[in-house]
Image (cartoon, rainbow, N blue to C red):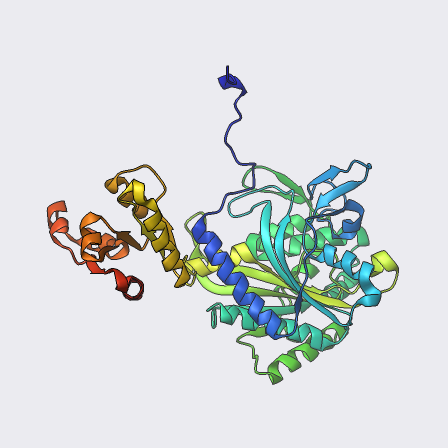
Length: 471
C-alpha cells in the first residue's frame, strides 16, 4: 500500500528561491561568455572556489556583524565546525590568496562566476540565491589597478550592447571617512550609516534620514533600527550624498580619485562612461578606498507600474585589508562584481537578450522504424543544428502539438509517401505561427501552405538552414 495522501510532500519552492527556464539559461550563458571574453582579453584568469567556507573565514565579510549567522545559511559539520554557504565571491578569494600567497604571481588577477546565497528577507526581484561575476586584482596599490577594472567593466557592458545606456560612478570610502570623522560619528555606528547611505537611490532622502536617525518602518510594517545619529550628524552625511565632486577638491581621497579619472580619460573613457560622484556608497564594511558602481540609465517600469531608472547592475571597490585577517600582512586589492540576474533583466527589457538556438523536431511516423528518424537527427546534429527525434507515443497530431509547445522552429516529416519520393516535408513552425495570426479562419490557414515545403532528402541540411535564415 502506498503512502497516504497526508504523507506526500507538497511541491513547493523554498521562499526566496526560484526555478529558471530554458530561455533565461540561454541568455545567462550568452552574457557570461561575453563578459568572460572581455575579462580574458585583459589577461584575467579564471578561479573556482567551493560553495561552502568555514564560517569563521567569512568573518567581517558577513552582512550583519551583530547577527553573524542570520545573513548566511550555515550548518555544522560532523567534526563540530560551522560551515556557511558563501555570501559573495570576495571572502573565498581572501581565503584562497592567504592560503596560496607565496605561490601566486603578484599582482594576482582573477575572475570568477558562480551562485552566492544570502539569508535575507526576500522580496520582488530579490532572491536568496543569485549569480555574480567578479574580477579582482590583488597585490597592487596603484590607481591604475582600479582604473583598469573600470575600463574593463565599461568594455563588458558595451560588448553586451549597452553602449550609451550606462554610467560608471566613482567615489572613495576614504572621503566618506573624512566626513564621518568631521561629524564625530562613532565607530560602532559607521556600519549602519554605510548601509543606510547605500539605500539612497531606492529610499530617497527621507528614507535614508530615517535610517540615519531612529529607524524606518517599511511598507510591510517591518522596522529597521537606525544608526542613532543626531540631526546635525545626519545633515552632514546627507550633504555628502547630494554634493558635487568639486566641494571636496582638497581632500586627499579626492586626489586619489582624480588620479584614476586621469588614467581612464587618457584612454578615451570620458564622463559619458566613467565619472566621479560623491553620492555613491557601497554598503559592505570592508571597502577601504575607491568604490564604484555601474548604473543603467534607461527607464523601466517597477513593480508598482511606475517609470524609474533601471539603476545598479555592478559595483566594487578597493579593500586593502583582504588578506590581513588571515596572515596579519596587509595586501592591497581591488575588485568589481556584476549582478548577473539583474543584468539579464536589463538586457531583456531592452530586447538585447539572446534567444535559445533554434530547435528542429523530427517526427516518427513509423514506430517500427524509429531508428531512421534518429539517424536523420544525428545528421542534423553533425551539421551543427540543434535537433531531437520524437520519443513519445503520440500520433502525428500529438507530435505536431509537442513541437509547437517545445518552441521548435522546424518540424521534419517523413511519411511513407515522402520516403517513396526521396523527399521530406519541412514545416516552418515559427512562420506558421505568424501566418496563423493573420488569417480569419482555420480553413484559410489550412489552404495557405507557405510555411510547409517538400524538399529532396539529399537537400535536407541546406533547406533547413535556408528556412532558419529566413526566420
